Length: 190
View (cartoon, rainbow, N blue to C red):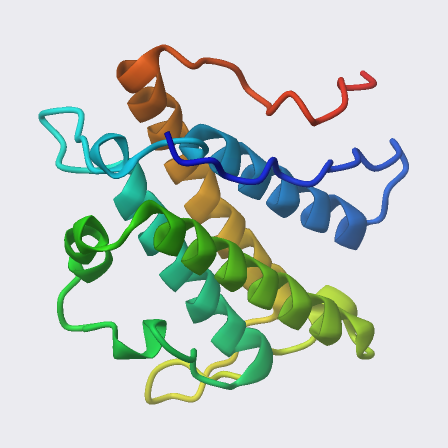
């Protein structure tokens, strides 16, 4: 089995947390859950689907790395660097299909690097005036619309919410691992 670093402890914010503290906690908690569900697996396990779906944990790691970098564009206006800058955006299955070609260590590193890049970009954006209300650096469509950072953070968390559920099912089918939070996360205080 390939070893993967245990996710950093994600500290639950106080019951009176600000909106930003809550959003950042929820994102980091979802990232920790994904890391836990994908941790310690070899290439065969990372590439094993749970039919009828063709989805795999390796595909989830690569897909969410691409998603993290995609949302980093919104915070910074800068395109992702290698290897995600070569993604074939005309092929919606690119990350899912090509993950099988990557070693577990490469998939873990790709995802964790992209998540850290996104986390850093979000923190820098939130340090500017305007908080979650400020508009993104990236414009969408021909009309030049710019979502606010709240919308971007909500969309990013929505991606994780869907895919952590998938990871739960895939991992349980692989080796019976169940649970909501990694053992390194503190108990809920409520």
